Image (cartoon, rainbow, N blue to C red):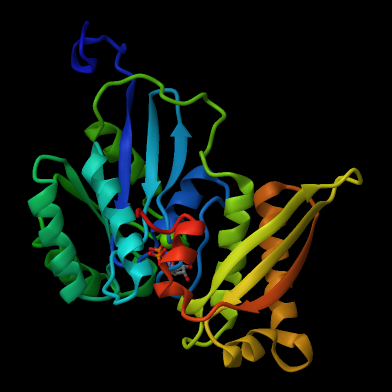
Length: 307
Ligand SMILES: Nc1nc2c(ncn2[C@@H]2O[C@H](COP(=O)(O)OP(=O)(O)OP(=O)(O)O)[C@@H](O)[C@H]2O)c(=O)[nH]1
Ligand SMILES: [Mg+2]
């Protein structure tokens, strides 16, 4: 049998492209931009993405299977182990690694560690440096910071972009396609992801909560959608539990007179409507599950553990 490398794909390129980088550098924003659709949750806080998620972009010349990953981070919880492994699995399998950095800041310890790990474990995989958030800084400072990032790894190339201001995406896409191997179309043209809308809704609700809550709570928040139905009237009905680690956090998430949970619900509904192109009704309930981030049984039940 012929191997993939021996087959003739008529110049068509395809492959897995891992979006790798510290939390909050803009990986999910970049992915949504390419797909023209909100499949990955974005928030102003780090650790918004918790699992690997595919975003498939099919053009005439190529099929790019982006793998959005959670930003590798330090953390003592069992949940952190899972999150970090999700990112590692993605880059070990990738045909191309996009090392995404926030160019408005100089690289820090986390960037060095990530770069070192990638150099050790994915020595042969081509790597592209993606310098994001160029809208945040004057050109001279961008130049200085870019040079510092370029020294982190042996990069095949680099591109400066702004995922929010939509600058540089075309150039980046050309470079990605250039670096991908020839290959088959793995997914049908119209498939954008493998993730179920229900799971995306879960992430969107969590991201909405991240945006409104103070730093104390977000990372101890788990969202579980227990009902996701398209009703006959054409409306999407969603019921979700917001699970927090402490009784005192429950009060904060609900807010004075239910104000906070209402705000979160409204923002989540708007995001879900955008994602699903369907009018939605979102009902949220808050529940306490003590110390769930270290609770093996809980993590296992919700697919957040490999054990
Ligand atoms: N100014 C500016 N902000 C950006 C840009 N790209 C992303 N952001 C913002 O940065 C924040 C984080 O974006 P995300 O896409 O959630 O980042 P991420 O890398 O996926 O983060 P994790 O999932 O936590 O690893 C959000 O508030 C984005 O709106 C950019 O080019 N310019
Ligand atoms: Mg993300």
